[in-house]
Length: 129
Length: 408
View 1 (cartoon, rainbow over the protein chains, first blue to last red):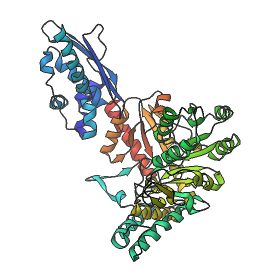
View 2: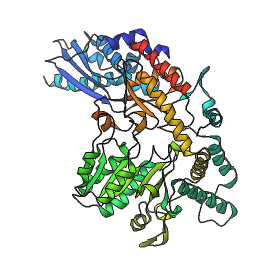
View 3: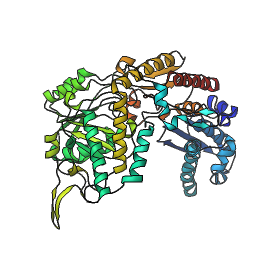
View 4: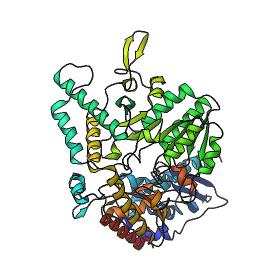
């Protein structure tokens, strides 16, 4: 239980490295967890090779939701969009390094949901281009 | 008037448990649902062991016993509310269903497009959404009594709204977030002067202090058993007889009819007109036992105890730097303390408190518009009941200091 608030999580919550809003961006997507009001927006830019060049998140919510967003953004920079599309919940849990019950799992996975929801939209735009 | 809290706590088996080894439960979430005393658990257990049968139709011994137990409970509840007759006590599933019963039966038979319904900004979703549905369907008009910065209703605006001839005034007796106890008798008197029918959401009041429906002169009162040490799955709609008599049935089916033909039916008399299908019989028996239990201790004594705990809790919470408690001062407030902590999100506060067995709620507590009003996404809420102790408040406060260690 104490593990839930590991130093790394508190640190990413209090001093997120990737908090902000990119403008212009190639992609922006947002969503909320209606149960607790956690809110995450992700913006990112993609380079000519289809890799994530820059990314940022904005929003508010509990430590788990905000820290997982910061860790997730950190983990996608420089990665091919196609690879990111296959990220699953285990990826986020590995980043956090904790076990979560069903209620807090929703907090942890909100940023992944936002990211994937948006990337699939972006994929369509790239194919059109 | 005092109560013996350790004697009371001994009657609640769940309060003896540890959340995990060595960590006793500190239950500060009674506003969501109250814990149950042995008397209630035993009454339901005994019902299933000895008397279980369907009610009203059977002529065998068990059917007669179960019917008598079901109706005895109704009479106890009527007495508890000082209702003129048990016929005015309709069993429902919960407060929400009771309010919906009024919205679907009385309101649909009465309200026309443009008719005004007055609500308040501190309503639980259960006293907002049924009226929003009716607004979409019928074109009724909704107006809201504002909540002031210190968590009270703005009665000046209320008087102005009453001048617009509302058909219904529906409001909470006690806010489940701010803890505000609204001046129901005065608000009902003013509503009647303006020609409106009144509906009181008693989900948080009936469990915590004496509510006399005749003294209040209220037209409808809705509340749930599970918040007053009774079981889940059963609640009550109290109504004035002439209103209930005139209302069309809500749900159709068995028990709510006097006779049924292939193409027509005649509805049953009160209260059965509104009780379609096999009801929550064991739960009614448990509800009756809950009423007996609370009556035995005394609602005045319970209210006095909760008031003392709440005063102490507000005092202790307000001394913590970064804590902001919402709602009025203790004199206008029931046993609820909803707060924010500047350095941590309510979910994290609740999670860290749980480490020490302290059970509180985090979120918008089914009152999202109220949180929007105060411009906060969520609060952490501690709430108290007859079994709450100052020692538990201390554990809450210790827990909050621990949160500050993590996040401060």
